[in-house]
Every structure is written in C-alpha cells, then in structure tokens.
Image (cartoon, rainbow, N blue to C red; front, side, top):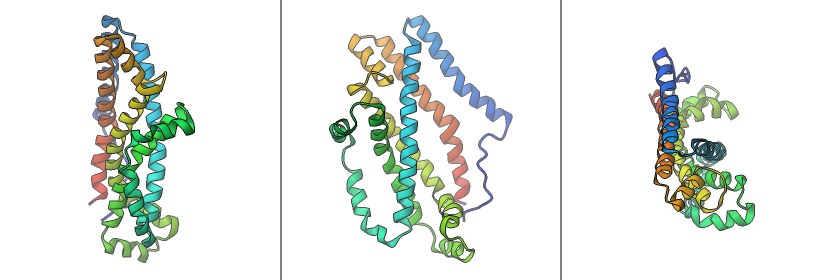
Length: 241
C-alpha cells in the first residue's frame, strides 16, 4: 500500500554526503589532470558537456511535466482507452526521422534540441506511469475515494505517490535516450555542446581528445546515477510497500 508518511530523504548520514562529494569531484579532478597532460582543451570539453547537460535537463523537465500530465489524463479516465493507440503509434515513429521537421519549424537552435530531446524522453515516462495507474489495486482506488481524496487532493495524495516508482524508472530510461538525442543533434548541425567536441576530435583524428570526451560523458552519467537515480530507486521501493 502507498504510505503517505514517506519523505524524500536521500542523504541521511555524513558518510552518504562524503561519498556523494567524492563521486562528484574526483572525476572532475581526474579529467582536468589528464587533459593537461594530454594537451587537450579541458575547458572546451567541460563547457561543451555543461551545455549539453543543460539542454538535456530542460528537455527532461518538459517531458516529465507533459508525460505525467498525459498519463494522469488518460490513465484515470475511461475515455483514455481511445487515445492509447494514438500514443502507441507516435512512440514508434523514429525520432531522428523527424529532425528535418524540427529543423524546418525551429531551425538549428537551443529550442530545437531541447524540444527534440523532450519528445524522445517523454515516452518511457508516459508509458511507465500509465502502467502503474492501470495496474493499481482496485481497493486502493476505493480507499482513496472513501477517505475523500478527490480533485487535486486525489492527484497529490494518491496518484503521484502511486506512480512515483514508475516515474523514476521511466526517467532513467528516458534520460539515456535523451543523451543520444542531444549528442546526435549536436554532431549533425550545432556549434556548441559535447557532441561538437567529439565530432571535431574525430574529424581531426585526435584520439586523445575523443577518448577524453567519451570518458567525460561516462563520468557524468555515472555521477548522476550515483547521486540521483540510485538513491531515488531505493526510496521508490518504499512507495511500493
């Protein structure tokens, strides 16, 4: 059953904080030292990675809001059954096949890459949340009604805790897809971002810079997993009990 008393306390001990800080700073220090010895421009790499990550975060925020809103709209409404086939078809359209459409409408701009990333990330969040809503025990729904959970109270106190584990899982899958979307677009036609750094290193045959760029991305992904997703996954298990 969903426990309303749960609180999102990820770092509860000093050791947790120290591990988090080490996970965050040690890879950055390594990259700076390695970059200086390899004579690669670590600042260009760091700024490009920061730009790509910012684009990914904004795209994720949009997809989280849109995906959750649609899931709640069609997952708690019988009329939503008519919309399911539409969204099922849309999610199977290859994202990169739509790049010319996005480029025509928005040009090769930050807005374009953010919206493109959002359309790639949204599907796992949407369908994981929908699955959680549709597989919930009927008794839970009835209990929420008996205790007066209606309107926004129902959404806040029942639906959101119910789909929280699904949102976390869907976000992890979506973020991985989002990285591919952002870096892929940057390689194709942008002037900033870590994808541009990788593309430039590849064209120049600079294997050291290429290796450094890939390692930097891996370090960032591992850091996010360690600091954000792993603790949230552990916390999400409480909502399933």
